[in-house]
Amino acid sequence: MRTTSHSLRRASSERGAILIQVGVAILVLSAFSMFIVDYGALWVSRHQAQNAADSGALAGATALAFDSFTDRADDGPAKQAALSFALANLVWGKAPDVDVSTDIRFYADDPAAFPSICSNDDCVRVDVYRNQTRGNPLPTFFAGLVGVTSQGVRATAIAQAAAANASNCLKPWAVLDKWAEKPGPFDYETSQFDPATGDTYQPPDGDDPGTSYTLAADLGMKVKLKVGDPQNSKEMFGAGWFSPVDLGGTGGNVYRDNIGGCAAGTYSVGTKLSVENGNMIGPTKQGVDDLTALDPDAKWDAVNKKVINSCVGPPYTCETQGYSVSPRIVAVPVINTLDAYNAVHNGDKVQGAGNMEVAVVAILGFFVEGLDGNDVVGYFCTKPDLLTSSGGAVSPSAAFLKAITLVR
Figure 1 (cartoon, rainbow, N blue to C red):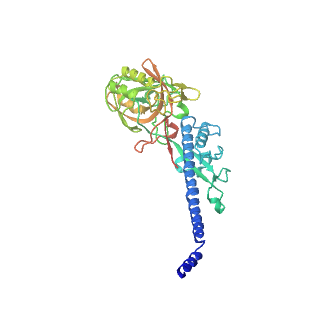
Figure 2 (cartoon, rainbow, N blue to C red):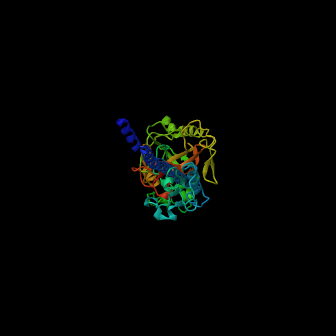
Figure 3 (cartoon, rainbow, N blue to C red):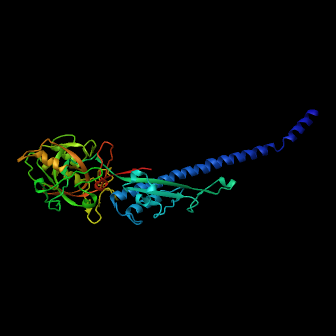
């Protein structure tokens, strides 16, 4: 009886202990839940907000490079593209808040908000919000137990439409650069380079485009590229004249393939190219036919200075997959006109230029419209391409190739 009485008294003294333990456990688990669930939701939303900002900035920089570099208005292509892509990326199930007037900016709007790399005013900054200040806060699930009923995130991204200086799909046409025609103006079909008559040439560099082609003067210009014969005298150095060059292999078949496809390797400003021996008129025609067949319905919109009806856009009808822009938008190397002239002129004697080396001073974007006799007809345009550390610098005003990158 004593043992039973003692056991009953002991059990009676421990009544309610489990309630205390459960209460403490609930408190601890609630604290952990508040940290894990609410803090986890915050960080998931933070990553989603950054994705929205990144997408908006990249879209804005792309439109800045390829739609209009000068239209910085709220309803212009750069800001509208940035806004559309930023809002398309949801943050915890809802679109973030982005004010097109104040949250999408360019370097000139507020230089202090941009890194120095953007000093050419070729960057777009996008800020996105999902917070209390903008009236679209994130919810909380357990933090309400301690009086926290909402939380917020914001994110910033800056993208640059940088001047590119290289291409991994260069076309084998070394085109004479533009010069200052005397008395002028320069005619894209009839001008002939002759220093004896006062024509002058200044090659471009990283700060000064010289007499070379520029976006302001030449974007959208219709041009005929005229094949030259390196074995002939080349007494006439005309606008649009080009020499076939060796890009990783000699011969007509390789040259044709490099027009219709891509030569292996990356070629940049400053690269030296070897001139082919023949005029390559037949392979040029065949290669251009191969190229235009890749995107047969593409056309040039002279008003908006861009390609339309391309198979790379909806409904995406390209037979060859993998193109992000029309394959008929190509990279064309430009060479030093004065150096090429001097290479084939020795006093009064004019000599052939087969196998001579020419240095690339610029690379142009060029939409290949087709052929006119032996001439390759097309329009100067912008093109996405590469920025390499080994390539020469390009003046932003003469950068027909653009590299779209996130800088922050």
